[in-house]
Length: 127
Image 1 (spheres, one colour):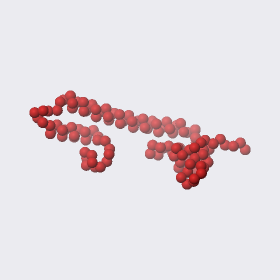
Image 2: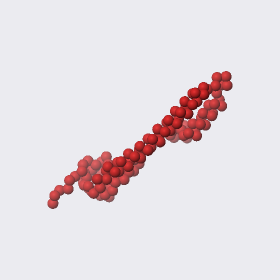
Image 3: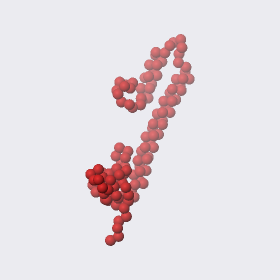
Image 4: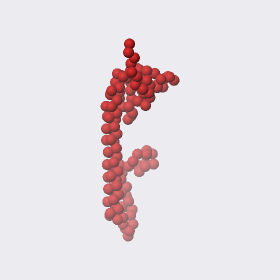
């Protein structure tokens, strides 16, 4: 269980950290108080971690947009891919590209296909 009494594995937020710090100050030994520099160091560490988390979220969003942009050349292309409905690889045309839960998803012949299931770009045969 976390500080709030829930069983989630999420990190504590700034308000929870400050509540924990105030509780720590209330229960410290008055004859041996916590060093002020140690308190400042704890606050600085928390601010650093919070900044890194925000930066990671921004990088994740930027990566998703980069994946969408770089995969846009696949629109209209013929690809060979693995499907959950078939044991053999299938061939189809990419109709749509989107992200879903941080993963790139292609719509091929009306079916949602994760980018990881694409095996190859197929050159259309000359008729």
